[in-house]
Image (cartoon, rainbow, N blue to C red; front, side, top):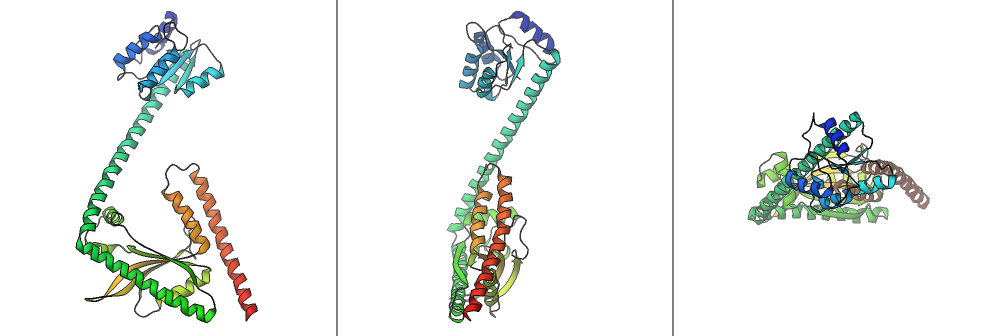
Length: 351
């Protein structure tokens, strides 16, 4: 504790020495010397502001420069009650105030609370650092293993199979689109987007699920290495197009999840199919798993915004945004079906 008035130092010592080992200093210069000597042992610093030689503000500035305030909480002991002074100190990183005249129970509780809060803060920051370091090490391992995976000829051949399956589904959808357009004078879908899972994502997913990182394991346990997203204008086009695709006799439906009729809790709506698609290679026909998602235009836009929230860290008011997105998803469903009804009325009028 630092105060140029000996009586104040003795009063505070009497209040605290039955709990803490108390070091005292009569001005800022002596305080900095003792801080230098005991910086790793100190639980808190009680600091007066108005002192000769070096005042409390100068001590705080030096502590900030040497980054001692990251480890040592500072409580100001002062007879001043002005809001301006308190704000100035708080902006400098001070933890709390103890106003004169001192009251024993208040002093003990403020010191105790600040020390405990600071200890919890430091423990939490240490855990966050350790977790970040652990995640970084895991990321480096994944990158290294993914590089080895990518260099393997068998992996390159497997990726070629998945790419061939994507092209096969795209071709069939485009043929259906042309036939539908000829018969109904409109297109059932607006766009097809495809993607091939990266080696890093493949390795991470297999490792997370506890599967070996082998070609057979990728084939057996991963269903989303090859993926397509089909964006349709109206909900009924989704079901019509999905039916036309899946009733082709050489396509097998391995899994179907209808998030349009049964939306996720966050409002997400889409039709998901896991298909087994035949591809034709020099050594014969082979079946490959492909994930196909069908969405409306509006829901595809919604999903892109939701994806940004999901993978962006430290978003302020995230819970409020999630709730807004849920409201928007429900509104989008109403809009999709209203637009579909308008389209039907236009088509009927044309007939």
